[in-house]
Length: 185
Length: 204
Image (tube, rainbow over all chains, first blue to last red; front, side, top):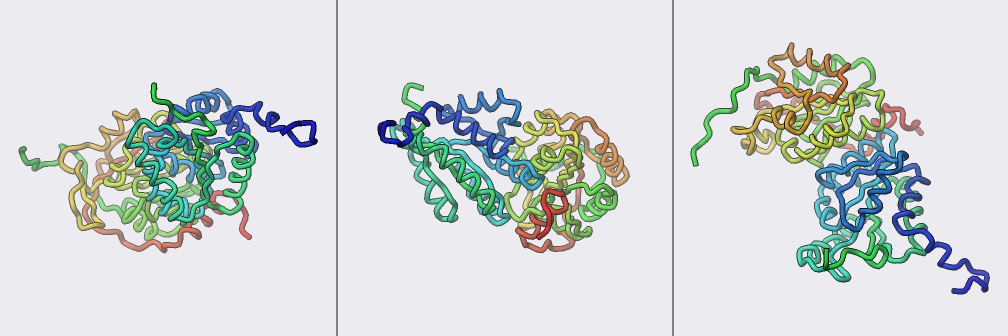
């Protein structure tokens, strides 16, 4: 799309990397607490969030623990989001069904997607297939982000919707957006 | 494999969950938040006299301490108590390291240890004969952890925790009695009342 036709060029959005979009959108929505279980794809984002005093961020031993922490923080008036990878999401069915959904907690999750588009680990490719069926079986809002030009819109609107409707949301970060994790690592 | 026949030596009295919970609740004068883990732990918290600053879990076994950590981080000026069973804590031991790292000084944790999954038929936990949960907590970096020798000691440890400079974990050995009441299982109301009581939002 050419800038000359009066449209905003996608390049205007492309100036920011996807992880900068996450960080800035979290800030704009006053999300200060970010517990995580790391993933290679999330490395830069985690570093940047650690480097920014706006955030309280730390690793947890399990994804479920991080969900408990942000749920408690929400009830205490502090907004949070959890970072994880696909296999970590697969450990969450119980806490989603017994805490986040029935208590109407706006749990915001960023899930780095492993298991597709070049996966080299058979286990990751299998567990990835459980993610959307679990989300759908619980009728949870979820989006798969594949394009940088749509990304800020998806993240910002999803956070706002989660908070106003008091419902959890999963934002799945596709390798199409992040580049994913490649075979040599 | 030799059969374990005795619990680790502990010079601690076997107490009662409802009695200890009632003693704790009687001490709460400053709108302290209390997070009750699943099952008997929150049934006894309910039975000790519902207060809107209580949050009752209805599932998510093992998350009482993480939820309490979240509340403690959100409201550093409010004292937050968490009540958890030994079987529940075994599901989420990693949270002890997270809490030891973050060191919220307004967090007081209590683990009710009867060595059994009382509510499912009193089956022994894998830890029952061999593990000392307070030693585990200390090993995780929660140095302010201790077994309560008896009810008076429990009350003393609770009082001490109010002015501690680090998070506190109190272990109590309890009997095999079931919970005294039954929490009203209304998750939305429980959460909304809790948030109102914590001053996070206004009622409609």
